[in-house]
Length: 87
Image (cartoon, rainbow, N blue to C red; front, side, top):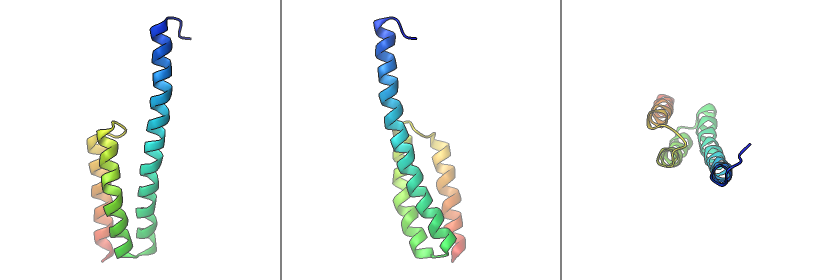
């Protein structure tokens, strides 16, 4: 358990940061799920629109430190190739 004032403050900061990052990750997953569902339904226009909405969210997660740059790029690449294959 944290004993020093500095360690107590760090514990508080970590809790806040964890909550914010958890919310960001959840929001990104929701966007990705929308793309997945559009792909499953076979609607190329809806899938393309969902991907276009999800891409900036993923990249925002990179700038905020939730995801690594290559992870986000890989996810976008794989989703875009699946959307492209629908047509």
